[in-house]
Length: 524
Image (tube, rainbow, N blue to C red; front, side, top):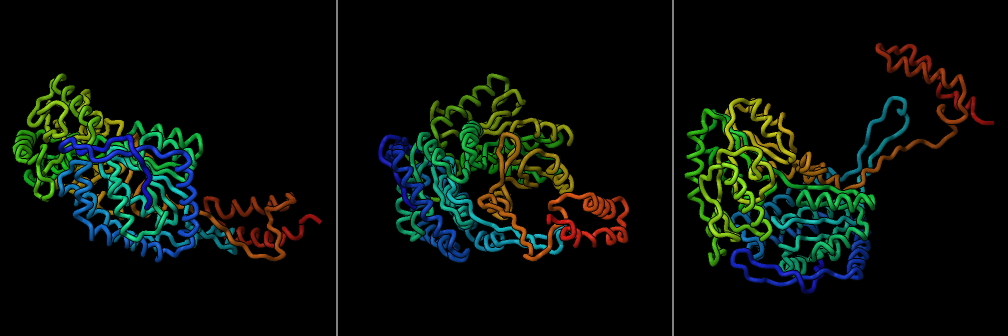
């Protein structure tokens, strides 16, 4: 994987504000050269067997295991994550995904035999699973290692060359320099191109065969518009305002711990993190204080804290300065509109170290309960009935993920079906993301397309439909010339076979002459 950049955009450490290094936008000539190398490499990738591609991906796995500590240090330096967050959601998950796709890819990417209707019984139908060509992957700043590696390796396994444009907030340039220089991974099969928005626009202008984007709704809309002008297909993995629903029959201790982790892991910088919490009234007065008391025990990061230990903190820093401003705005809006602050809040204006923050007395007029906050905040609301909470949970422009908590698994499953979103956990949260066999994606403003699972792997493929017929003297009855006798036979066959009561005698009587009528009534 090659990394191109120079100097201009400052990359900083959100924990202490230190400038780590600078990057710049590559020139259009450099971007053209990147695409030239990618397209040359793609021909070689397509010629490889799936086993050979898997052997290349194994080199990534081996590198991740060998250099685990260095990778974690690089991630933490640019994101401010807690070390365990960085390990579990990025390093461990990459190895898990590789392990799954080594099993899934050979089966999923194999050409398929497809059945045909009775009228095509003498022919053969096939589906060829082929690469698209060159794929552009544009990744977010919240999971800068995982979101580069996973879609890239899926694209590669499907036979594509891949160009990755990471977020300029967390480009991990030194890591990619070292990672692919030492892994032995196939040269130019995956290239990382660092830069800002101009780089993204220039990469799209070179007309990749597909774009895979993970990021905000606003940026997703702009990218979709740019791709539409060039008729480039695009998958969009966008934001969320994920609800968690707690019924009054739950185990309070287990559920509170699950909600606390689902809301505050990665400092709430997860598109599938819990941002809205609906608690049934029968348990509300018991559950909420319990949750708040335990949340206050969480250790949060601060400038100067040692990040080398897995026990450094529970909730890390907020990565991006613009996200800090959004979180502050949402907290201030909630307070102004009458929400009650139970813990956390703005401790130091402009700081990247925002503690886990919980509000009650919230409603959907507040930004904290309606807009994506993407930080360590939780808006709690009370509900009475199942019907009411389904309506509240669906009252959102987002539809990414959700969770339902109840000892009654039948009820949990019923509510899961009623929620308008792409992913649901019952008695857990976000863990469907940890299963690479499951497709992931949203509805409404949360995106288009699916990532991971068989569906996600096929999203990087051209599904080519092929029909194979025999060569001989037979003239098909539906070919020219059109005649009255052909029409009558075809009509009689349709009524006999597809009518309310299938008439086999009439079907056979009319279908047999079709084998010869084309030759009898062909052009002379």
